[in-house]
Image (tube, rainbow, N blue to C red; front, side):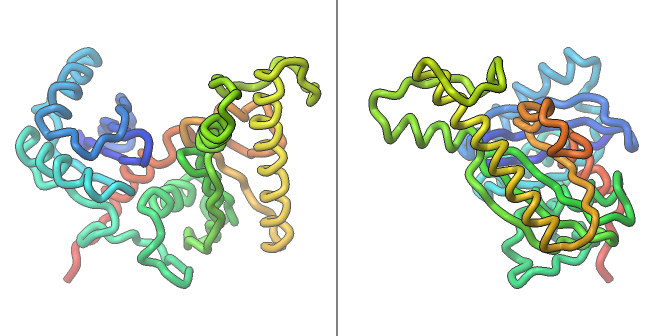
Length: 261
C-alpha cells in the first residue's frame, strides 16, 4: 500500500492507497515539532481501527508546504515503514507538468499536486482549481495540465480570526452557511456570519468571473480543501467538488514518477 502525506499550514492529511483506490484518510493538526514516534502512535491506532497494518505499507510519498515538518515525516517512513519517503517535486518524483510562471520554484507543492490531480479528472480542458485552506488559492490549469498561474487570498477562517483579533468586542463564532439568504443581520453574531460567508461568496464570484474573462475560454471549476463543502450550496460557483484532490494527486504523482537518467 501507498501512504500519501500532505502537510498544509493548518492540517496534515494522511491517506492509504491500494493502486488508485483510496482506502482510508485521516488528518491531524500541523505541528512541525511533532516527532516520528508521536506520528506513529497516532497513525498506528487509526490504521488498526480501519483494519490495516503498518506492515502493509511499502511506499510513502510526502508533499509539504511546511519545510520544518519534513524531517520527522521522513524519519517516520524510514523507522516505522522501512522505506525512504519520496518527496513531491524532488528527483525522482518530478512534477511531470510544466509550471509556466515567472518563479516556478515558488509554486507550492500542494498547488502543483492539485494541478496533476485536476488534469487526471478533467483532461483536455482549461481548469480553475479553487483550494479552500489556510489561504484560498485559485489556479489556472491548462488543457495539457500545465500550471499557468493564479491567485492567493486569505482563507475563510483566517479572515474571521483576523476580524475577531482586531475588534475586542466581537465574539468568536463558528463559520457556517447562514440559515437564510438575508444579508441584514439582527444580532452581532449573525452580522459577522453574513459578512464572512456572503462576503466570501461575493469574492469568489468576482474572482472567478475575472479569471474567466481574462482567460477567454470555458473553464471547468474544481473546488477542494477542508472548507470547500461550506460553499457546496452555492452550486453556481463550482462544476465539481473533489475533497481528496490533493491526496489523489499524490497518488497519481507516485505512479507516474520517472527516475532521472
